[in-house]
Each structure stands twice: as C-alpha cells, then as structure tokens.
Length: 91
Image (cartoon, rainbow, N blue to C red):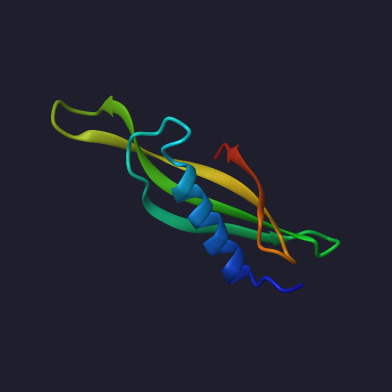
C-alpha cells in the first residue's frame, strides 16, 4: 500500500472540486469535511466519505438561503491514488 489515508482524502477532495461544475452544480462547495475512511479488507482500496454544504436553492426566509449537507463516497486505489468512483451517500 503506497497511498496513505491522508493522500486518499486529498485525492477525493481534488476530484470533487474538479468535477463540481461538470455535474451541473453551479454553486461553490463549502465547508468540505472528511467524514469517514475505510480500507478494504484486501488493502486494495480506500473508501473516503466527504461531506460538504451546498446551497439547495430553497429559502428558509426571504433573505437567507438554507443549506444542506451532502455526502460523497470515493473509492481510491491504494497503489496509484486514482479515484475509481464517486457515489452519492444519503445521510
């Protein structure tokens, strides 16, 4: 295993930031936070869960937009650090 959990988390965050606009998200990702880490039983993959706040377009009042926390799970190769997938995780 060459990729540390820290490197895997950084790879996940960089991936999330790079694809944010590609998936139709026009708002900025805010307050990104590492939520969970897990090493697969065969030591081949890191599973990294990141959480972040996103403007959901709904308003709790006329002037203050409400925010919701979203979560993404990333599967990262422990040898290369390449992100294999990103999935939406429901809280």
